[in-house]
Length: 599
Image (cartoon, rainbow, N blue to C red; front, side):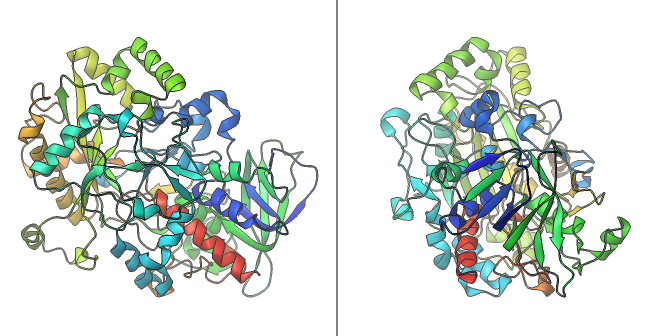
């Protein structure tokens, strides 16, 4: 593989992929397995491995909370982040939220919280229904989930957790891919108490979340390499392909637009580039077979629109010639939100200590670097749980929008967080101020909506692809989401009231505090503090056209030849939980389809 920041002449390839992120790098690696095929990947960001500071931030699991805040001053990772913002969100009391997205080789798999689990069986079966393609059922795609990863069980001798982490080894039989799935060498002290408290309140301990069932509570498997405890991102696909001469990765290079010929329907011929050193890169890369967008849920629809594919009103407004009028491009954005209750604790170690004590932080970083032990090996949210509202609650809600969901689709996810969270503005600063002002440490249980009904959009504000898109997630605009959020908040309070939690609690609820009591007060607090879980999806959905589709079930853009979109924007529906595994799965599925259809 060649990482290129500059070449002297225009190049032709069989496949040109836009984005070296979670899906794009995996797809490029798979397509370049055929030595006769020439593959180019265009990445706007740097390779984080070449930047010592950013490499440390990416590699260290415990640093994953750095640079993900809702406000701009949490900016330590700006060199590998797009620095996107939403427009003011009515469902969040008109707050504008910073939305972290990876701008580097590895994309958001180099920026996420590393949680890896598969979706519920029914949620993938729903994809088959929405696409009209029975090949999308969970059973038929389970092999693709296993292709990208290799699994290592938890090291109980190092973790010393009790109860011990449970896992389903059967879910990884035959898995031999480059992305490593394992468990942190240290379990958070708080996670034990969270698990026991949820058990006490009726949630059973799961055998793991990788076999198609999302129910109960358990330690999450994560994308951490057990050899060195470093994050394992989709850059692992590059590492696995580094000896190939038929794969070229252009870094620091942005795409201006897709080149479409004049035929009807138009054919994608390649891409136009703009870049930082304009005298050293060609104006365009030509694709002899296909152009594939893997630019993510915000920029894949943006690139379609600036190229003339999208809603005609937006294209006309920005004087973009209309090549394909499809009002579904950029519509139907789905995302998960979360919020959390925080309590002061004693007798256990939390991440508040990392924020308060520089000496402790340095000692633990050295502990991580030389011995792969301590809190820096932990991804900060290592215990997760899924739950459905009961029948009487749903009857009270009378929400017809939830009736179409498969019976195994959870409504809420709960996550452990060993520190204070609040409005997510800057987790390090918030914990430092809370710890220094009280002399205490803090823990949080986060609640995330796993079946959100609110929908958003991605629009363009310019015909220039370098101008950020207009991101409107529409969080908490649907009344059903508002009701579910309030119920999840109340449920979280029940967990903290469990007997199993009492040995560690050191006083009253810190955030939001006991004065927030009524449903109206609770909803208002949620609006002021909710944050994205960074799971934006579905803006170029694989669906039938009458159901909001942009792509057919093989990722092909309706109305254009030789053009596909392969990333989370292609999801027909956002599955419950964390989508990392499903992004890798669709990359594997797309690679197989592309190879077969171009053989």
